[in-house]
Length: 113
Image (cartoon, rainbow, N blue to C red):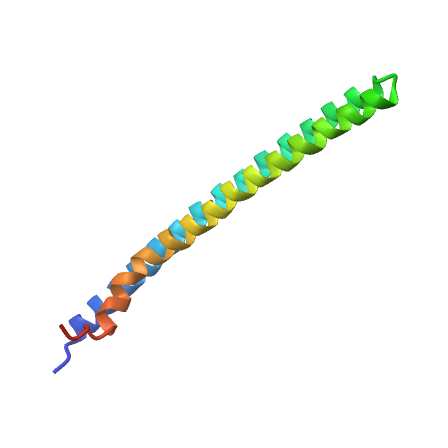
């Protein structure tokens, strides 16, 4: 026979699990948004610096050199930041679903040994 207390405890356990998962999700999304903001700020500053350097060149050769350096630097920064943020998304998914693993384990029949 199922007791009301058992049902309440079961509901509270699941509620607590969902709250933990939501809190992890919230902090992870904030960290990712912060990383995007930092990358955007750095990119803007790098572009500003590039334009200042480019406006000061006197020859076509120097302009091509400055532009090539900027393109290489911008690409390397983009790749590095993209990998960092992708890793943050992966970690976020793992951490968000970690509290739910216990719930799933209760409903998944154990594999036959």
